[in-house]
Amino acid sequence: MLGKMELLEKKYQKLIKGFVINKFRGDIDILRPSFQKLKQKTGKPILGTIPIMKFDIPDEDSLSGNAKQIIWNKKFVQYLDKEIENLSRVVKSSLNVKAIGDLIK
Image (cartoon, rainbow, N blue to C red; front, side, top):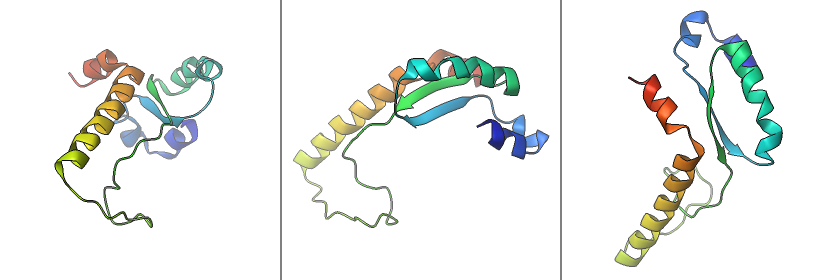
């Protein structure tokens, strides 16, 4: 993240308000000390760390090589609702929602 920030022009660096680590796999306690170091170097906080997780939601576009034949019936939609709810619960619990809200005020 630090390298990417350094590659951006200053006018674009100002647009970044913080970082979210996505698809994290491993021990968060090992990663946590680096949050302060990154903030010291960039002036931007880590707003959350979303773990890597498996979920069964259809691909959003046709770029995937594994296109599924989906039958959009009531049972599938209910299943999909549960998967999306689970995903949103994990994401919400992994983010500092208050800090994000404060940034967009």
